[in-house]
Length: 482
Image (cartoon, rainbow, N blue to C red; front, top):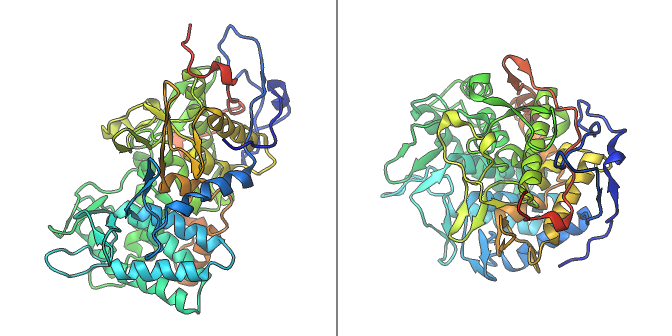
């Protein structure tokens, strides 16, 4: 287990002077994290040092990278790479490389491999140049599923656009642009074939059809990448000529009827009422992973407030359940569990199952982008991640393991989508995405995301006037409540 520097004693009184503002740099005092009968206590656990945390999790690529294609393996299980990959894993790897100096060779190799695996109009299967899960045990890599996710491909497309902008005017940039050009018709066909009028969730290469369920829930996936796809790809094709069709779909998606919210009382803090947005199944990645692709300073105050309240709620639940992380998609004994989430933050109107079985930290790491480095709130998150890393066997040689169950047992599995998200805390690549869109005459990400306003009962969501719950003392973890 690594020895993180920067541990110290934080009193809850330390947060008396902080305030919650539109930029969410801090918060006012509260008794967060305490049972009502307890007195304020000191937190004396470790907090991570961010650069060391990033460096450690980037070690995933020391064993989790396919030498031929440059693709990351989607997982390393019991020390053995799972020789497949997926669009999310590739996307985070590409964003990491774009941020790195002197990584042009690695970026070029990855883009060449992406071009190699795009499939369109090749009977009996047609993937419309979208990327499904790929089997890396063959040369070239082969699809290992007939279905593919438009949400996951949207995430990948946005990261390829970052590369196109970063390497504009070079052969590498041309490869990125070629990948995007090949996808254009497929996205237009998908939107045009959707019964709901929204971009569909899934497609199938054998049926040449799309899922009738559209992406009409704001916190249903990677909302920033869906915004990019709708703004950049839609229009100027024989299928859909009007480029405003995509913008209209985005504007509809962010309306209140597709951005559900709820009001509830915090569990561990007296008289604290939370107004919070809801996600598909309450899984934290649906709120916070999208922050890796946007410049958060351009978010509307109610969007920032809603995300702050959701984060507060996750940490409040972790405090009550005496756990060192939050409920989010995670590995488990039989694979990867997408519906692991906080029940009270699930959009029950959508009837998606929710399980509260494991806690993780990758979404907490992504949520750090909401706060300046020197803010109290970011320090609190560093403490929660440090608490997670203090659990026996929660950290391996190549990064933080992806989940801990309610009994305190880590699931010793490394997943590229989690480790990849954790090393992008300070990514500068979102500014490239903004430039890419505006230089192509499309609405920028700042405009698209800045239009999201979250409300409850018609009123804009305000951040709860309380500091984020502090990490528990280590000895209180996993103990029965009296």
